[in-house]
Length: 319
Image (cartoon, rainbow, N blue to C red):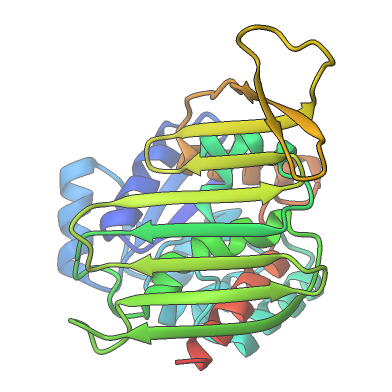
């Protein structure tokens, strides 16, 4: 079992504490929170060991799970890496690109592993179809949320849209060519709603919309590629896979056949990939433990987290 300590005991931190405490791959040593009152309250309510000294906790563990506000990600990870500890960092990896790049250098210097908490990579709906997404040429995403003061310390791009940026970068095998975007601040001091158009060198175009002032929640992505349309509902954990193939000369009575202007006939058919129910946060934490034990590459590396941050910051720069 891997000895782990959690930094941050807020809403998400408490979820991480519970899952790590239940996981057979980890031994939860305790947690640190700079708010002593909150730390003692969480310790009393759930029975986890509260460390008032961050260094004492880091010295007692093999891996540090950083679930603090984004502004402190860099300092927490740097301190842990310099002590030779592996780090799991909630998204976004850091507040600035320079900080993220330095963490990558520290990862190599101290021979430790790092993973970024882009949890949608572990969403069962996305996992069920990721291998079917091949060379998409148009992508459309909508990530809408009802207003919640938690998370408004960063623009909606870093709060919500970065999930879709990371997912898109994981399936588009091409470099970003150009970004156009706009954002509007409605309630917060930073943009609450944003739209971005990302063009890739291979011709793929992604149109992303994110809002944290919507009347309903939505997390959908649509991928269009040659002879296929794939829809992923991250919220409802559902997928639609619609494909086309050359139609038979004598199609069946119930076959759906389309004919284009050139007279080519295509048959439409549907695939229903099996979706395996899971706890995505638990999966991302446990696969990181497996990567540490087996000395393999984590599912979401610090480099990938840095690339997602870079694109997100480029989107923000357009505002």
